[in-house]
Image 1 (cartoon, rainbow, N blue to C red):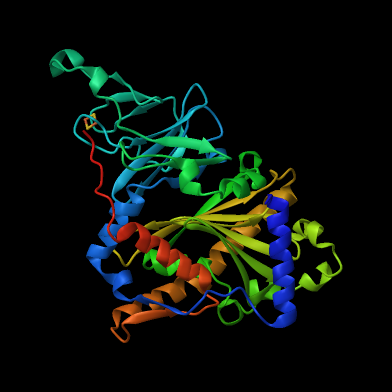
Image 2: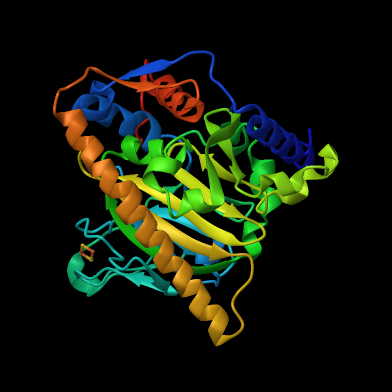
Length: 391
Ligand code: FES
């Protein structure tokens, strides 16, 4: 089935759900142990089996627009440096100096044709080779060819940059994406405009991801913002391996009535919308028509904390001051809504989890996306393959 057909079918399902007072349904209610959110060993197992081993969506290509552009971040205790080389290719490295292990590039992003370590000044090029060893004659004999930055498996596809945090991890992106790539290709992200990033602190990473995967909470948690445009608790779910596309009916979806079903794909971003979730931690809330956010949910250093990078992107760059002001207004709006209406609620959920009041979270049949996410996590964590270490 092509993308247009998939989207048309989702649109038709959403319209039917509005008419019938229904939503897509999981086969049953699912309980997830509270311990799965709180237990430090479980959390470490998730970091090891998922975040340190599976391909992670670390950036969009438009964040590294020129040769020499770079971006850094830390995930699951691994500092990462993404760099677009002279040849235009993006490479990923552990952002750790081969001398005495200082972080080489502490800034979050920028442009540099070479990376100089702030401790003793060793310098690496954009391909990760050690090209300058300060006061070399006094240092003694070393083979600089062996002292480059540690490279990580990395691929740029459909405007997205994926990397694994384990240098020797198997990296088969097509298999991992399980057919979801066509959806992302449809967006054409390589030609979008990157505007800004909001950094927002949150609770446990799974509390945060839970909030992206259902619209059950729109009426009560977002009555004047999201629910003003989008109906609450009417959803479609399409799954691609551990990834998923969640459809939501806009309040104006009745305007779509009478559209031939095979033309309904044109209403995406107008009469219905999607959250596209790339496992384990990235949610796109946007359409080709109006832009929006893509959010990276990065677990903190314990099971109870997260930092989310909410990136604001648009299909086209603003051309006028008024358009630039609008981009900034949208940026501030998304930060405000997610901070005050989602993440603050998340901190209170965290308190509830830690209170010991209940043994399980209960996910309804209407919260199928959440159920699927937790089942996917279990699929990696329960009896994971042994982690492959560097030789
Ligand atoms: S730790 Fe980087 S140059 Fe010494």
